[in-house]
Image 1 (tube, rainbow, N blue to C red):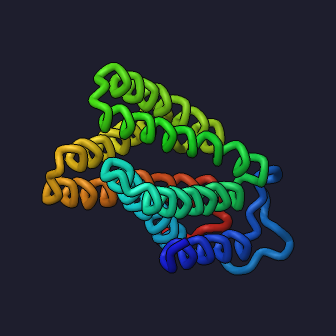
Image 2 (tube, helix red, strand yellow; image 1 turned 60 degrees about the vertical axis):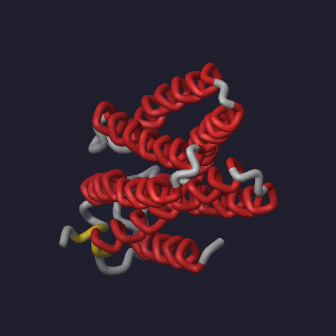
Length: 216
């Protein structure tokens, strides 16, 4: 796990622990401290999700380059990031939600591995199946978030997740074409795009728990 991932996860955990959020009874905790800043929540989510995009690109680049030791290391660090994101979700909505979130989140990473392998083999059929799986995943993921927070419209979230999928697909395509200039441009775009997911997610959580997060 990188320093930035550790810092973001620790900041988010401390933020939510001190807020006393409870996913079962959406009421103030008796030991709740002063209201937390919604901006702190937004920053923590942005850091974790941006790192997800960057680590995914590291893993796909290593896989396409046949650097298996590097791929395994990148994949392990990517999974550590996934666990941090799941813990963040669990801190808000409970351990059961975090445990349900993790395999669902890992699922789209698996589909990207499928796409990367198909790209390396030149299998158009395999690439199409992986893309179809990813598009279907976007709706499933959006339904999960919408069920936890009605402030996250399913259609809007589906669109944002599809953009995330396409941005990482562009990274893989550029890496496979050995166009490093384009690949790094696309990695930067994919990382920046995660803000479009992190910001509304943070805002929706703050709106759902107005007694815990100060809008600033």
